[in-house]
Length: 454
Length: 158
Image (cartoon, rainbow over all chains, first blue to last red; front, side, top):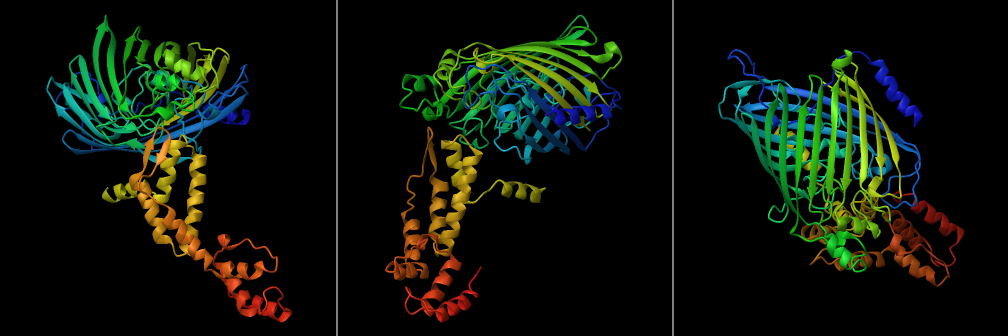
């Protein structure tokens, strides 16, 4: 463990310098209006390639646990390393249309095989059984932007974004394989685990069981209308056939994730802010906590044994971001779902509140450095908690018993910009009641993360 | 781009037997990669056995059926309308008429034990045929007969 951590540290030191890594993995539809431009500005880009690599080593010392189950975070000291690299290819097909192709390679594993913490502390790791590197298509989608006037704004070259100019008001429709979080649930300060907060409940709203396969991608149609100071979004996407697995259920009449979001952008004084509210209704072949609790013996105390078509999960997610000073911004994430059906695609969180702040290094003359501090409190529905209390297993939790308490986490990071393209972050995440269990923990997770983006 | 898409689609397609393992693994075994790997090993061995026994058609028919009719009820995998008995009967029938089976029958009177017809592959079958052709009394082969069996066995597939 020490050797690996030392290697990551040496890599950081080796590249020490200044400036920042680029990074957000957004689709064109996430474009926000910028300043108006003159007609001669905004040269069109027709093809772009970007690349990102993120690798992180995590470790936690031993912690006390009265008992452990098959899906517990191990109380013994352990470490784990994972990486994900993505090629972002983006081609302009015809006016307003872009083809996005993102092959991705990921490998390694999370602590305890990515089990035992609902808001898992490693945002680049997937709950896959095989740690061997795998190559797969992350995104293959076409995005069509329909201009709606309001003056011209510039879009800058970025991953999955071609440089050029466009109308301030627009409707963007993206179809294909994608991640719904590319368009929905954005937050300027808590949305990118490759270089910002690392916790699952911070790069997305914890209680939004967003439609995705085990790697976070799905197939769908997403629409994003941007009009001056507000945006309205709606989408439909495939749900997985089984909880948190790779096979998608193409029976749209029986299984789908529906989502709609409204975002308002504003300024308080000169400081920009935004608030968005997202509502979602997921229908999938999920199991029911009520049904398994009614007769645990009949179902082997396994919520999966109660799976049936037609089950629905609904909820909301509220996201706020506010710049407080020229160098400091704060955010809030609040989300909840009905908690009646088994967690299906993201993680086992039924209520979640997360808040924090990000301070730019401009304050200490390292403008591309960044420090972040955030806290997350997650909860379960009463039935979900009872299921785990009885020894039931979810796809990420299951200590064999439960003395319920809210899962509470901190996420503190310092991102050191090493070159224009490379950054290195040191992250500390204390976890109180891991897996909502007061009989276990607290655990203290330490991470070193390297992120390169070109 | 079309070629790339073709290969990407192809990469996502496994054999019917692999699909069987993935379906059952995902439905009944929480997607366990260990379980799916073990299942793939088993179906691969069955594939070889069926191929050697001349039962490839029955093998393909069965797993094609499982691919088409797979259903998952809760955590119970089901393949309504798919009957494996034709495949099993074909393999059993082929194995009972092999030289391995004949040799096992011939030597049963000697009190000898043999791994039996169930593990009969092409090499074992060939060696059994050499033995039966060159030995007059399977319970008491002469040194000359054993020499002939060895010479015959040299041309068997390894």
